[in-house]
Amino acid sequence: MKKRVLIVVVCVMAVANTASADTIRGIGMDFVTIGNPGNVADTGGTPGCGAVSSSYRIGKYEVTATQWQTINTAAGIGDSGDWSGNQPVASISWYDAAQFCNYLTSGNKYSGAYKFDISGNFLGIDRVASISTYGTTYVIPTEDEWYKAAYFKPNGSGYSLYANGTSTAPVAGVNSNYNGGGLGAPWNMNNGTQEQNGTFDMMGNVWEWNEALIDPFRGLRGGSFYGSYDNLASSVQGYNNPYDERGNVGFRVASVPEPASAAIMALASLFIALKRGKR
Image 1 (spheres, rainbow, N blue to C red):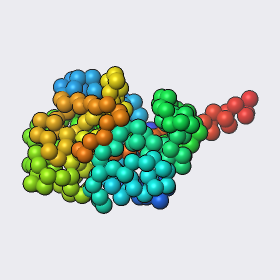
Image 2: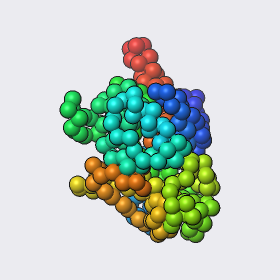
Image 3: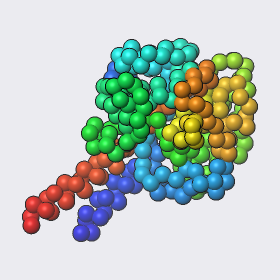
Image 4: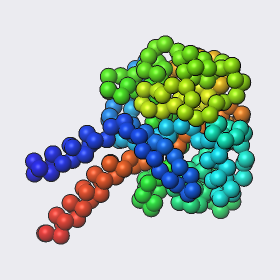
């Protein structure tokens, strides 16, 4: 019994903030793993936000225009978006982002964590069913997932005001792209300074959709290239109509379950099945 417990503990401890890459439906996406499952929610910033019960992965970068166009062409989502190349895609509605994630998951824009009928009408979210059917499931981050990836310190000691791990705003146009940044447009991914959990541009560049339902709106976080530094802080909760498309609103993708967690669950299921077989 002790040996089995030790194996599980070692696997859980291995779920740290590490980088990984997937090739999905013809595009490459880089992810960072967000560990410290079961962390407490923030009491500052946005109180009650940031607690996530399990490990997960989140995009190291925002979805780029090239990635969007590749999937859009294959999936027939239909919206070309704004910007180009390695700039983040923008002018993408929340529903467009959901269909992008579905296509990554299943190869069908209407099948995955986000339920649509054959006419494209949105019906709801069911991550559990998607994981049961497809295994690895790509999603728009929940607000808690997004918030934790940005503001929770990787050593588990609490939250910071900004994604750089401090209470000091990053330098515009150097560490982060906001307030015009001298550019007047989003910059290419991998610019600026890597943030505390291995991501880029959770501070500025483009606002990013999350799953938060603030009736009848959907959540936004992170600020954008022409907003002020105030919008980068953990205390700012944005939202917009899910049908809306703006040149400073894009998204990044999360992935559940995190592979090490999935392996633990598979081993647990196998152990239970073997145990039942011995009865």
